[in-house]
Image 1 (cartoon, rainbow, N blue to C red):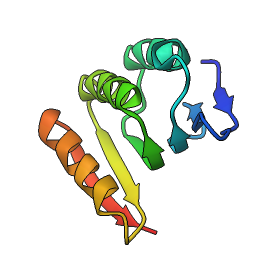
Image 2: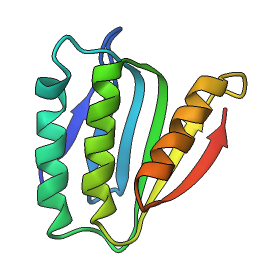
Image 3: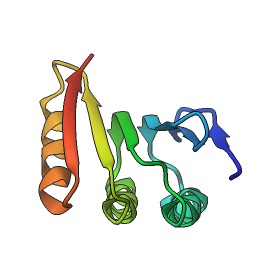
Length: 120
């Protein structure tokens, strides 16, 4: 599978989707001008990955901030991941960031995937 690797900017997160190296990460800030357009290739990649997924998929979310439009796309990503057996979400949040911790907890309530919460 192709590798998706995007450097983060002030408005878009860093994205790594690498099946062979088992690297799956979204990190940084997510407030792209058009969230649906930005996340479309990620959703397409995950949909293809679902058909030939690794036995375990540890997907790392290390977001500092995301806007409302991004939250819907994050939920869309989690919905695709929910269909992949062996998926674990690792949700990182700064130890002083209760909002990001609560966001992860809310997402974990909306999907049937194991979540691990890590502070940094």
